[in-house]
Every structure is written in C-alpha cells, then in structure tokens.
Image 1 (tube, rainbow, N blue to C red):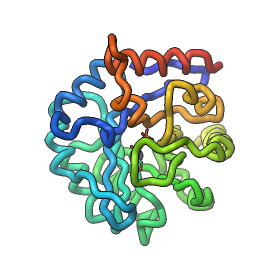
Image 2: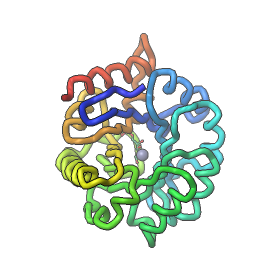
Image 3: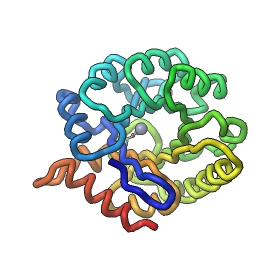
Length: 236
Ligand code: DX5
Ligand code: ZN
C-alpha cells in the first residue's frame, strides 16, 4: 500500500542488509505485513564493492515468503552473468552500476528481455551523463546517498541537488511522451530526513538500518514504516 502524492506514489523499500540473516523469511514477511512496497536486495561481490553478501539462491529462498516485488541492487562486476540467474530467482527489478558494465545499453536490454524492470545506479561521485542516451530503456534511476558497500552510513547531503537534477530530467522525458521512470534513493534514509529527500524529487526510498535496526518497541517495523509514511504525507 503506497502513500499517494501529487507526483504519484511513494514507495518504501527496506534493505535486507540490516535484517537478521538467520531469519530472513520471517524478516521479509514482517516488513511486508508492516506495509512496505518493495524488498531491497543488496548484492555485493567483494570486488566492485568491499563487502560480500548474497546471491540468487537467497533471492529464490525468500521469494515464496512475500508477494511484493523484489528490487535487486547489483554491486557486482561483471553484471550480465547474474541477470538471468536473478530473473529466474524471482527478482522483479534489477539495477546495476554503469561503471561495472562494459555495455550499459546491452545490460539494460538484457534485464528487460528477462521480464524485469531495469535501472542504473549512480554512486555519489558518478556523473549523470550516463543517462544521456538510455532514458527510453530505464524503468528506474537509483541515486546512492552513501558510498556503496555498507549499511548504517550517513546520508550525503549533495544527493539532494542531484535528485533534483534527475527529477527534472525524468519530468522532461515524461512530458515529451516518454515512459514513467521511478527515482529511488539508497543510503542513510531515516524518519527525520525522508520528507526532505522526497521534496528533492525521490519517489522510492531504500532504508536498511532505519527499518531493521530500530524497530518500534511497541509496533515493530510497522511503527517505523508508519512514521516514514507520516513524514511523507507532509510533502505536497
Ligand atoms: C549500501 C546498500 C544500501 C544499504 C542502506 O551499499 O546499497 O541498500 O543497505 O542501508 P542504510 O539504510 O542503513 O543506509
Ligand atoms: Zn542498495
């Protein structure tokens, strides 16, 4: 159930990176019951980023536990080899970092050919020029508001200006007859900054430690997610 805003729906996507990995099935069921919109699934390879997480087998294992879409964020190099594996494992969205693919246009097409929504991820220092020639092939743009690799980092403030730039590009694209494109933000999103991030133009919010790290003592994940929705409801 998404919160509706003037620009469409706001989506909340808890990152499993901060979940209890010994109880992942229970964790994803609990956040779905708390009313989130997507499960954000961080894939790290100890090569493109200095950390190692989970692969298609774990995606496949959690798939039967939820009905909401699984949003796979690939922090791996090379990218293409894993696209089919994740599609088969039940991924609905697949995003990747353009620096990690030798042929960005081809990788986007490959993701779509597998029936998933496709997106590019921008690190804090990655310029937006990668968007120039691929807008028609994008379903989602993901801006990193921390350097990728770890949960629990602080939101990098310059992401707000970058979000506004991407929002303007997407709005121009849609006004010119282009397909809708979600604008997702990942890293350091919390109850106290989510409204400002939405005002800058984001519509989809990844939150790892803020959701899994600090459940409401009385209402669990539902309490945190509810407070995020309340904050988003203050945005026009
Ligand atoms: C970082 C990951 C994020 C991370 C977010 O590389 O892509 O999804 O888990 O965690 P928080 O919300 O704690 O910053
Ligand atoms: Zn992520």
